[in-house]
Image (cartoon, rainbow, N blue to C red; front, side, top):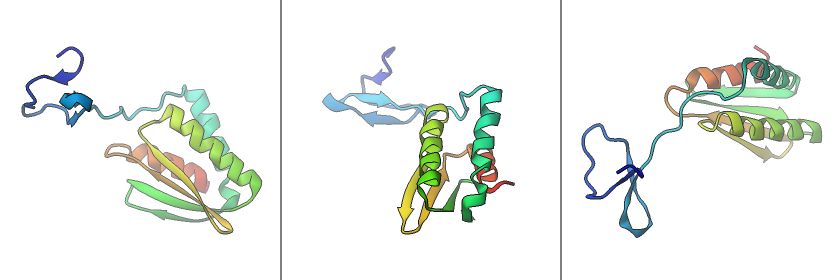
Length: 131
């Protein structure tokens, strides 16, 4: 149907994934495109902002390109800047999952995404590590 639902409840081969919506209707779910919406100049500025935090980095655990966990010294400025980056990345790269957690005297930033997002994840992690 033009409204993205499937009336008979039968999905054919190659159809996008379906989910049951309220009222029993099936709704087509489409993955988010793996593309940053920031213009190139703004991307450079964002990566520079990330790189400026590398001095606060304590460790990084990479998970084969699909995700990484970075640990930073916890202080008010670093936490504020990381929260700002997480919020900003959520706007321009909604396909990514960036999660900031407090772990005692450290901040833990998890960066992950779907298949195909590895280059974007690597770029963010490289910037945050000052690579």
